[in-house]
Image (cartoon, rainbow, N blue to C red; front, side, top):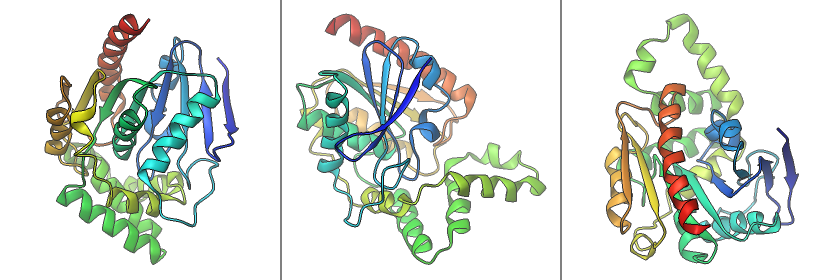
Length: 269
């Protein structure tokens, strides 16, 4: 299976993999396409064309000198899919990517056919807002190891953390630090400013909302607020799952997403 990486005229570094109906991927803050979707890329690419743009400061997309803007980011992701020859597509968003996906659906209703929103939020809740502020403060001070420790604390569950031997904790922090893109503080600055609550009632495409109930970064009530605000949205819970899904939880996620996408593609064919 061929995986391509290209920098498009929009300036975004985009991963392209697979063949079939297009799926546009919107990753989370401080992440990337591999970081958020790596466990399922090969499976989804068996029968879908995956289009995975990286936000400024992630992948090979350069860091921007201006604050990120949600409208601009949504437009650039949609433009990436269109530039690759795809007129209509579903959007899979994770964490911050759920707000990008929602905004893409309301700004480009002729393009977006369905939404899958995982560990998302319409506006930063108190836990997420505090975490976003801490990431920006620590990164500005050059305390990237502390940012990585915060990420481990926030993106794993109590059970996962309790199973890690003390001797391996530093290695986990180091590994987490190496995966953090330079645009992480810019991403979290956007997290603290986005608000798509007014977008939700305007969404008219099939929507699947997935809530990992063990999420320590985004309150599960925020995930549920997305589902409650979108007409006809389906809510699926992953009991005890963390903000970053483990391999078993991602496998369950994949089963639900495949069932959902099969229904969307049969209606839009």
